[in-house]
Amino acid sequence: MTKRVFIIHGWESSPSEGWFPWLKKELEKRDFQTKVPAMPETDYPRIDIWVPFLAKLVKNPDKDTYFVGHSIGCQTIMRYLETINGKIGGAVFVGGWVSLTPMAIRSQEDREIVKPWLEKPIDFEKVKKATRNFVAIFSDNDPFVPLENSKTYKKKLGAKIIIQHNKGHFSGSDNIKKLPVVLRELIKMAK
Image (cartoon, rainbow, N blue to C red; front, side, top):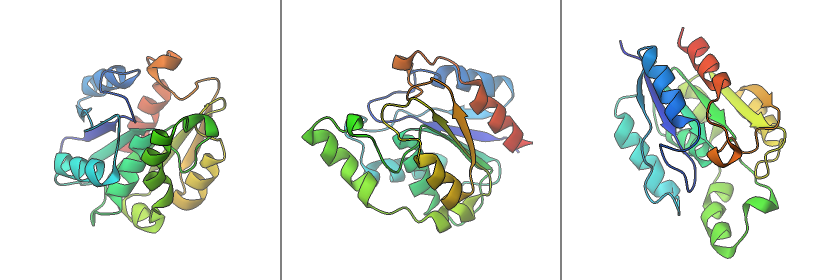
């Protein structure tokens, strides 16, 4: 069976941003069927739009289905995993958050966008039923995601935590064009 990877970008991002094209190319070299969808309404991401969009894209998740999320893409994946009954291969979360720094919320519009993502609880028990393979990668100088988020991912999902040095929010604007740690962890999961 072909292994599938879905790479879900974050808020105000796109499939061509940062390290996504590099990861897609590297995975395809290793025979992973890889999709980096352009998420809808990326300037104003909404749970009720993004989660069904992902579900429609994935169709039939199975043990050969893997996910990589960046920022709000991580929450999208978790909220999607709450809705499935089957098992997936695993998920790698990069710069994922359940809380944000004040710098991440600069305007009233930002507040309105993040409010549902911050306030609507994630059912971590349901998420954990989908797989035991979670890796969460954080940067020690992320201006938007407090490092304490790593404790939540560890405690609630049993995720393997990896702290990277000086990677910001892992964005193209942080000049992150390759992220070998994600590729390495995905390959380990998929063995």
